Amino acid sequence: MFFDVAELSSRDAYRLVIGSVVPRPIAWVSTLSAEGVGNLAPFSFFAAVSGAPPTICFSSSFRAGSPKDTLRNVVETREFVVNVVNEDVVEAMNATSEEVGPEIDELALAKLTPAPSRLVRPPGVAEAPIRMECRLDQVVNIGGAEGTSKLAIGEIVAWHIRDDLFDAERMRIRIDLLNPVGRLAGDWYSRSRDQFELVRPNPNYQGR
Image 1: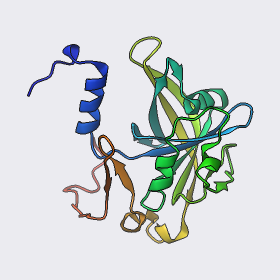
Image 2: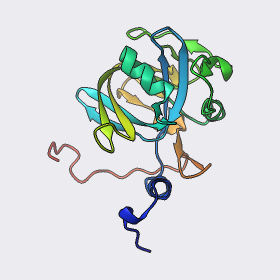
Image 3: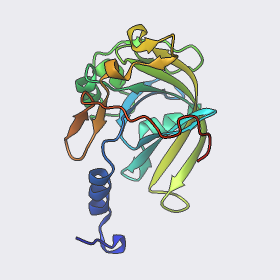
């Protein structure tokens, strides 16, 4: 099959993207509005950008031509928390994807526990195994000057990691215990229990 993007509807192109780029990690983003109303929503267009400084990004499309609550809050306050989704919280994450009004705090709606942050105002999700406090670096328009979606790039300023998931001697997160969940296409998700290790040919090489 061959598809010229110019001949595809935006919906069909979206379906090909989410079916081709798999599995995708999930950014479960908690924010506060300028008025202090909480918001919690998942985004699967999410990636690590840099290790120095530690930087991540997530993309948010528009809803009915307007920015979603998460993006609006991030732009207004320049702060957010990314909560990592694993098997323990995946059902709660799915519940927070419901479309509700900006006056509704999805964290409370899903009966989750707010976890106070140290360096930013938005709380995290206490039930999440890892929380990353972030400050907005910049927002990039995707799809023209005004954009059909926006990429929020944020610098991580602090981590909260569940004690049993951290190997202090090696300064590493225990991926074998984290059990993260990835987004596939449609209503499908993936687990990461079937893991294997490949040692890099030149582990100390600092090039590209």
